[in-house]
Length: 265
Ligand code: BTN
Image (cartoon, rainbow, N blue to C red):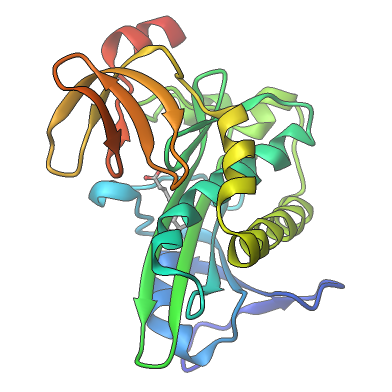
């Protein structure tokens, strides 16, 4: 790679992916988007510290250097049907939920890109698409609060938790990352080979706020008050809107609204 930043290549017994670990990057997503042409499919860029970690809607993603996990995975999308691309974020959320269940936790998926434990955010996903004439790639950026302390989590403006806070002990990030990569790559292969239906069933079981009153804000900042009824076959949300009746929502996010925040604090 044409960069003065030297990564440590982490050896694993898996041929499917290669992990490049950096001490510090601005953002693993930004870095991977800049360098993907030089990298094979399923390359993983892991940074111990991000100086400019990004979330959806131009938000900042903060994590504790050396304690949490911030990485991006390069997915080959050239042969994936275009309409399946919107499912990538959700299969990542499902994979993280399944990983956390392996630690005895009960996570839920806040559609489309957050993973919660008892309503508190433990992980966020930022999936971006990048392409040349010959190659279309997904840059799947994932941040998980692993070993951040209760004290540092109180600085986050929404209810948040970490694996350490939940388990009351520290977790080795490399082991967790390898387990997670295996789950994601497996879900991704299922998506490519059979479509979304199998992953959809698994996401539905873990979907947060179904039949609860929520406020949803779309990318144009329109707000919808109502209830989530279901996850549609294509991965959009089936929503009973107080003002517009039954609609499908395909982009935007569920608000962590005030009454909800009060309940969780
Ligand atoms: C969100 O909650 O809005 C998504 C957060 C995504 C954060 C991850 S951390 C690794 C990767 N690099 C980034 O700059 N962002 C993603």
